[in-house]
Image (tube, rainbow, N blue to C red):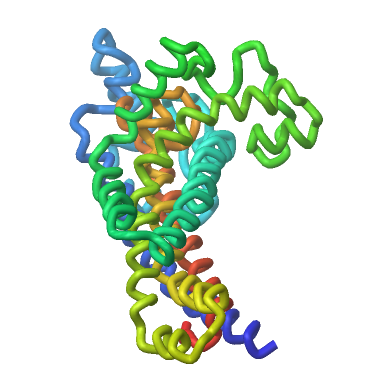
Length: 340
């Protein structure tokens, strides 16, 4: 119960600080999209629209009001749970986000799971039992991974596995065109299709995930692998590890100590990469016509559709705050001595 009360107090303190953070983020979201040149009403109506029609639509969109008044209206609507209306999709933005968010979440979650399952064992093996060559190889990959754009990797994968080998499906969404999407439960096609025992949709969903996931894994796996390996190598040289080693501690138990004491900074990096992929998967989503939040944000920028972009920034920021809160709680579970 003592641990629970401490965590609850910490969550309450963090929630208090969330309010000014979200207020600052709302300012960025509101004004950033308005830096894009062009009148959204004019873009929606087309170059053949007359000035009267443009003025009428601008009034409907609230663009005729002073910018500061527009901002306060924006904040008031958010507090009511109204994220605005997309003039491009003709839907409430909240509806669009609810429809599209699971697609992005499925993509980045599986990418992160694969990164962790591959990176941590490799880092552990090379740090504890590796030699100079394997250590340099890991460091080299860690430095080079981010140098290759994820969209470039995606295009190469499409060329090899779809255009040439024809063993993976066309980059046109999350399912084959002939497959009916499973009834929505979680929004993850891989899970919903399995729950419904729709194995055609299940297989199709997984095959469509392969190329975008590999693109994100190769690009984003480097920092986690490099951080995990370097942290384990550093912990391996700590005095308390040498003390245990000199006193004849079992090697397997010693390796567990090294691994456990290396986790906090690695967990931080994992959380950072997860949050980064929410926005960093934008280009990959567009290349694979994924239909997630990233593609939605790009469409909103291209069409000067203010509300969807503002909502995307707010959703991404809120998710970041939630992820970092969860990380702090995980730290405390791993080591209750940590002050949170």
